[in-house]
Amino acid sequence: MKPISVQHIVKRYGSLEAVREISFEVEKGELFGLIGPDGAGKTTIFRILTTLLKPDAGTASVLGLDVVDDYREIRPRVGYMPGRFSLYQDLSVEENLSFFASVFGTTIEANYDLIKPIYSQLEPFKSRLAGDLSGGMKQKLALSCALIHKPEVLFLDEPTTGVDAVSRKEFWQMLHRLRKEGITILVSTPYMDEAEQCDRIALMQEGKILSIDTPGEVNNQFESNLWAIKASNKYRLINLLRDYDYVDSVQPFGEYVHYTDQRPDADSAELRKYLTSKGISHPEIKKIAPDIEDTFIRLMEQEVSHG
Image (cartoon, rainbow, N blue to C red; front, side, top):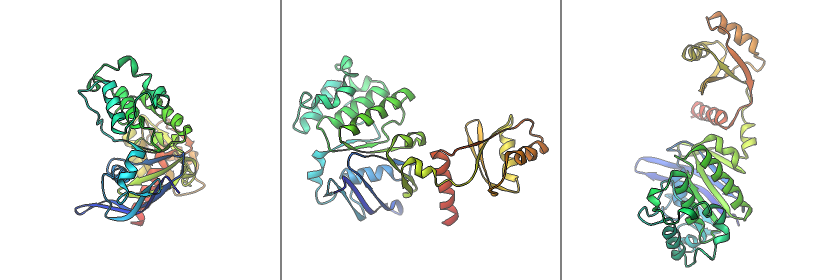
């Protein structure tokens, strides 16, 4: 039995097909990530798996239970942290946690050991209203509330959106600790750099899965040589690269431009000669290994060209 199984799920909102024939499975104790931008269909999948939304086609099960027929049995056995902070802003930290524990027929004390690494950071502020917490503290409280009944599967929908880099790092450290407790975790994020934190990932775009594998194997799908190129006039650099006879793709990445060439044997010397002949002085050109964002963009381009 797979803790999470999704088979050919379809969900429509009027004429919009938000989820299009999605299938994937998550292993017990796995940290599995749905990676993609807003509108990719991630939240719709979470709402289906947490029994808040019925699919229009296909089947899905959690802990071997059907999400439509067995929703009453599923709900006490899973934890769900939605994308938006959804706790009671006018209750204190401790009151929120006590309330969610009572909903599931337990107490803070009964499962304190599970939430202690997270909640211990909140305890000095347990009398503070939830609405007065910082983004990182709200995140920790929401996770504590999702865990207080010791769920077997944890659903986290974009849990790190809108929080600072330090809080994001801390949050992923918490997830790795929880995975060691045997909890199966499905997490979604629009941040491509967070994909590396997952055991396996599904890259999503416009309701479809582009690729499912470990982050390393997903990156192996990027078969072209990749260069990072930098020049004083980035806009002119982009246009010159797009006009190059052998251009394959050109994507701005921070202060650099990521470039791939149609020729497998192209080298940086040719690129430098072309750019300097067009008035770009001293361009910085270096061959780099692709990351998840490079691979995601490449897969999207292939999807469009095949579509």
